[in-house]
Image 1 (cartoon, rainbow, N blue to C red):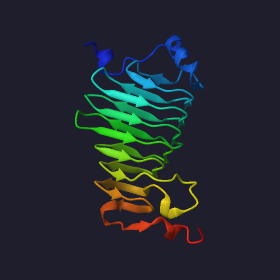
Image 2: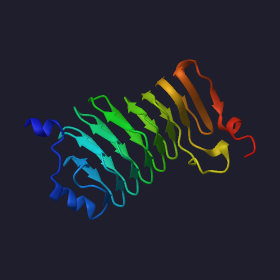
Image 3: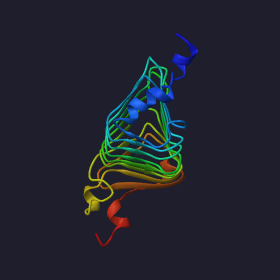
Length: 198
């Protein structure tokens, strides 16, 4: 295997033009997409987006997502990264990295991931889930549910917000963990607490 294949083997600008026929690529010269990645249709890729995979890994992206500047998606060394549709990745330098054979990240539809998080490990973010803030989310499970526009907070997907390390957390429907530093000491609360008028 060539070194280029191990590091992503990115499409040329001309090859990226074929991706742009089905997706919106706002700057063909600053967006990098691996030839080993699979993209759906209707995605928007802002300048500086990197979608990197090697030939031993899986990186699939659904349709109608928005990847804001600096979004970095990685699947390498046998890692698996599966992203659904209609999600927002940014703004704020989102990193999603499945970079080992034991690393599998599944992200559902309608998620919102913003403001500098790094998502790694064996992680599952269900439909409508949110990770907001400079959080290292390692092997977390966020239950799927309604997205952030769901009027009933008790029906919304699980949410992580704040700053720090969130490792091994399980957050259910209608729940939120608002952490500062070590999320292990932060309580799991009902989202209704943050939206008492809902």
